[in-house]
Length: 496
Image (cartoon, rainbow, N blue to C red):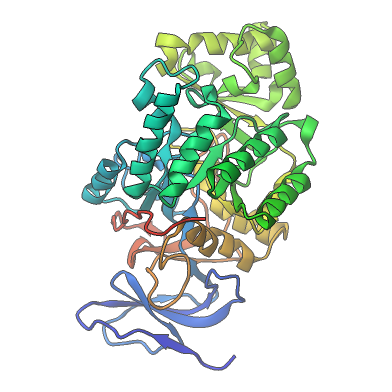
């Protein structure tokens, strides 16, 4: 390839950074090229064969890959980012933008949340959905464990429309959780229509991710079709051995929907285990039903596949599987599950519990990771036992690209950058191009790898040493600079 030089006029008053000699993978899916990248202020101003300017900071990227900053399409950093604005666990993964307001929960009103982040300053760029559960509780109060009335649905729709108008990406639902599980499809269509009318999309932690996953996907398609808006499946998975092998069918449904004018995408994290409340092991709230628990445990491979990641009433149980607790206490596994639910219900709910459950097949996960319609996420939350919080993006690069060849490095980067940026309407982000925001990751493709485990879920990855957010180094030669240049990203275009 001959020399290339693409540049914008430099603003002489601002210092520049030159990322020199790296293999640039620009995020579009194009093959890598050894070129230089110049950053001035918060913007990429030149890409090509560039000469160092006097006084310019140079990052030597020889032998390394230079890529756009990674976009975490499903994140829970809103649970802690304002109190830990450096977000080291995220920037060390190369994440420069996190999308929050997931699973039906968000800050309300969104304009106040945006103002908080703008005033507090954090290391990451932040975009958000409006949460269905949040809006439901706002309208229905504590009496939200029932079907909504037509008037309540109308009031919820008005609030959703206002939140999307104020910059939310769309509406998120958490239909396995309260209060979302008490809604019906008609309510969700009405709220989806309100989001779509103002340019937003629908994203859902669906009603079911195991035995009835296909029916749950059909509901999502119905909401998208009748609500006249695009939709995304949150942390797509097949979490029961009874339906393993259905990934091709799900991907075929997504492809067919697009042919019919319904654009369905998804996000996924690269692990065969998930983290949630133990309550989702059974499909209803009938926690006293022993047979439901027996079947739920069977579907995920047995009690030794359910690790108690957190348990306030008895911290000595933390880090043990239900099987291990059963053998140590002499209680049968179902009784252990029921005791956990009972001890963390009602007024004791704040004491909390969470489980990490190994329930997916590698074959299904590989197909989801390789699909061009599926982007990547952490679904990460500080303090959890799941390593996805600190390891998801390096794991894609190290395990699924370098070790297992599930997808090429160029395609992995596209699915981390330009694809979510385009899907979510992030203008001038997600690519290494002049005029785009300087969210940039420099990493070693030969060594990048996750190190987090369920025993050490916050262990930092290796192989990522330099990260810029809006032109500011937040990770400089492996050292977190503690700078907080993140910006709020509001929806400004109509999403499809």
